[in-house]
Amino acid sequence: MILPELTRLVRDRAGNFAITTALLMPVLLGTAGMAIDFTNALEKKTELQALVDAAALATASAMSDKDMTDAEAQAFAKRYFTSHADQVTAPPNETPEEKAAREAALLNGLTVGATTTNSSGNGQTFNVRMTMTYPLSLNGLSRALGFKTLQISVTGDSQSGREGNALSMYLALDESGSMKELTSTINPAQPTRQESYDCSTLFFYKTCTRTVNNYLSKMASLKAAAAGMFSQLKAVDPQSELIRIGAVSYNDTTKPEQTVKWGTASAASYVGNLPDVPAGGTDATGAMTNAFNALKKANPKEVTEHSKKNNTSFERFIVLMTDGEMTGNSNKWNSSIDTKVRNLCNQAKNDGINVYTIAFMAPSKGQSLLSSCATSADYYYQPNDMTALVKSFGDIARKAAKTGTRLTN
Image 1 (cartoon, helix red, strand yellow):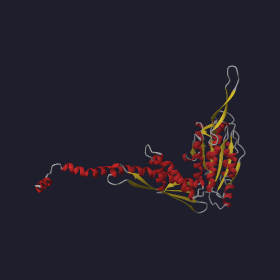
Image 2: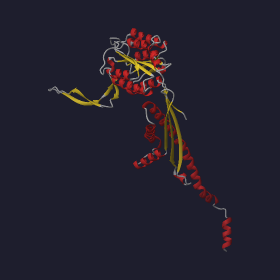
Image 3: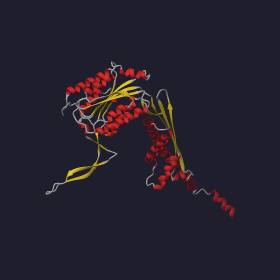
Image 4: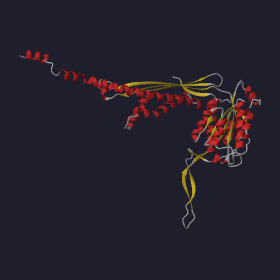
């Protein structure tokens, strides 16, 4: 009796689809889960690649700008990466413990190589390679097949360099009365200050004080930005054998100049001693005349000085900066002065001098003048706050000294 019943059960085809579906369901769900995780992995890989590239670029640039050791560069790269990694790797509603574990996993999977290579003269090349391996957690459907994590690997290579470009530079800087005006940048060293105000009542006269934001003036911003440029140029030429710099300031008159000297120290001191509370109108003709006369081909001084250092060739640069328009000793635009400055700029450019211009929070006529004076659009800057001003001076330093940063992978 038993054997026939078993034989009939084996031959029975009823319910085969349900049984087959039940048997295959874990595999089907796991496959769907893997497809979702694969799409997510591609997205995370793209995001991590962008983050690694950004960190490598920032590190190579910092090595060039700040004279870092290789060990300091590696630490910088790790700090940069982890500080920006949350936007890519942090899940929603993460607990402090989960965050600590995730960041530990990030650092454990991050490898940084930073090297400095000396080339001919004072030239240097900085190479950074970053490799990131990150364990991406898989969803519950994928785990049904026994997979818990998927390893994502990305690599970023970046290179920056100092080519040791010999140059002579002359700064023509505005110290007119408008340079005492405040910017939108708060002084990081002293973010607040005490301000007096009239708090009199109907019967009593009284002066009170209150705490207000302490904004940097345009002049303070100029000094900080120029100091950053001098620091970058000094890093390129620590022995003062490639770079010569002079400077002059102006309002409606031309101030005593700092003649062109080797290195950055003399010009840095000159700019640092510009008046904290400047005054006067704006007339750059004398400053531009000084700059042109110092660097023009007809003046053999710079050729002679560079020859003493065996610099067979060098470039010449003028940096003209103003926050206003040409007014002379007045508060109205003066077309005659404006035209004279334009002519001096053209004279310098025709002589082969590269002219950088910076219109710092300047009105339209000032922007028009400096845009025309610049060698090309790449030589014209129009910063409207201190951060942009610092970036402008830094960019000029990198271009003049022919330093650069690029991805190489």
